[in-house]
Structure formats: structure tokens, C-alpha cells
Image (cartoon, rainbow, N blue to C red; front, side, top):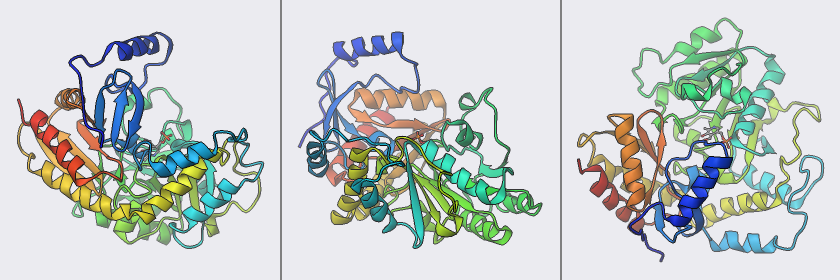
Length: 408
Ligand SMILES: Cc1ncc(COP(=O)(O)O)c(C=O)c1O
């Protein structure tokens, strides 16, 4: 198996040149540290200078089978001479679209249909549009700390960091507290808003991704389900980050014994998807569409294979077991050296630090020690390894964490 291997100078000379070109010609977006990806095997990513890193990010959950997985390589090879790998997928039919729709139906609540689109934000946008078709352009309810994407519609319901929203126009929205404790005094706040009968939908994550891997309280989610039904508004669950297995179940909502009316997913699926209970079907053609939506045949074939491999190799069980091991190891560091909290579901694990500065410093140090992690929320680190991660790799990652986090 490939091993972590870092040289003295990170970034190396090739990485430095690429980063310089980026800084000169490209928008300086949300780059975390100076990783310039070359290729990868299993859970190891190699950079352009030959440094090898253990990946505890899976590219924010988007690479659930790690890198160069034989099943995925087989698909990529099969398309190497197919010149129609990308088609106008909501205008022309293809086998991959039918296969993915069928495969995702098998893991969705019974009676759900799916619309495929390019990104997570667009999956949320289309979920919102489906809700508006029934209720009109009334405000939607979303939560403090929520992240639903950066397109303007989805952004209106995002409340993660001010920099993401400043000066952008907004759809009407009402904000409630994302409650992580059953005894939170604001646990019923949605009902007061719904009573006025002027709400189009409730939109929330179950485990906030960008917000810092905050796990919703059981009562909070069951209340939202109850209120949505009582007041006749759809409950939209955003599973863009948590969906397709990272919590140890196909969907995070399964941990709560409830079902959404409409939902969004993306990342691990390789493409965006809006799924909805048939009773919310727009009921008319052309309401939703997009040139590439449902048209990237490779991504859809990979998405189908991801679902098959997760089932075949029992990767949901692996996510649960490895997640427990990871949380246990990290919990032993809690309360020491500015590590304030460890939380999560399955292989989505958040570590909260005392300050943003401290978190950022540790992220960079971990990177330099050959371990990739990401920031989330104000002061948290997020860990979301590929679902194929092994016991040995969890141990190796924990060892590096211990070395880096427990030193002053
Ligand atoms: C919960 C959630 N919703 C929506 C999005 C937006 O997805 P994308 O970046 O693919 O547009 C993200 C991205 O991180 C997310 O975590």
C-alpha cells in the first residue's frame, strides 16, 4: 500500500510555480493550503512534487472510494473512446441516466423520483423550485450556520459566513436556530413562523457541513418533520455533503427515523440530484432542466458504481466502525491544548478548537506532516475520509493528529 512521504520543503518547486500562476491568473477562492494534486491511490494523494498525503477529506466527501479504485478505473477506461461522454442530458436520453435514476431510487424513500443537475447548489435550487411550485414565492425557513451553496437562490438560505453573502440580493427567508440539544429553548421556534401560514418550505441539513459538523438534536429534526406535516409545507433536507454513506447510513436522516419531502444530494454521487416525493412532482414538463444536467455520462456511470461498490463492499458498516474509532481517538485529546470538542456521525467528524487562528495553524501543520484535513465553521476542523479507509490508516492519521495537536 502507498505510504505517507513528505519532503523537507512543502510546497515543492513545481507546486510553487503552479500556485504562482494561479495567484496571477485565477480567482483566489477557498484554497486551504499549498496542496497541488497530481494523482492518487487508495486514500493517498500525491502532489506534483512527489509528496504523498493521507487524505482525511475525500475532497469534501466527493471521492468516497478514494483514488484509482479498480471499479472506477474500469469505467474511465470504458469511456476513453466514447466521444459522446457528455450530452444535453435533459434533452436526450441515455442508459447512464436511467441506471443512476434506478440505482438511487433503490436507496431513497419509496415513491421518490430524481432530477439530476450539475452541482450541490443547483440540487438545492431545484429543491426550492419544486417547493415554490406548490406554495408560491413565500419565505423559506433555514437555520443558523446553514450552508446550502453559493448560487443566489441557495445562498439566500445559507448562513454560514458573512463573506459568502455580503452585498448579494436575497430571496425572502426566515432564520431559526440549528439546535444541537434537545433541551434548547428555541427547539419549537419554527412553529411560531409556520402558524402564520406564510412559509413555502423548511430547509435544513441534518449534520451541518460547512457550518462545522454540528449534529442536529433528535428532537429538533422530529419537530421540524412534525411541524412541516401539520402546516402543509415541504421539509427539504440538504444531504449534499452527508448523503451516500458518510454518516454510516445512505442518508443522515435515517439516523432520525424520519423522511424528507424533497431533498438534495451531490458530492459522493458525482453529480447533483434533487429527489422528491411524487406528490411534489411539478406535474408539467420543462419546469426543470439544464444543458449538462443528467448529461455527464461518465459521472453518472461512476455515481451508479459508487452505490454498487458501497453495497457490495459493505462500506456503510466500515464508515460506522472507522468513524467510531476516529471519534474515540480524538475524544481522548478533547479538553487538552485548545481542542474543545469532538462530534460527528459516522465518518463525518468535527474537531472544534479554541480559536480560528489555532485551527488554521494546526490544519497547515497536519498538511506538512502528510495528513489532509479541512476547516469548517469558525473554529472547527472537518474530517471526512473516503469510505474505504482502513483501521491502519485511521491509526496512522490519529498518530499524526496526536503529534501535531498535542504539542503547544
Ligand atoms: C450541505 C451542502 N449543500 C450545498 C452545497 C453546495 O454544493 P456545491 O459546492 O456542489 O455547489 C454544499 C457544498 O459544500 C454543502 O455542503
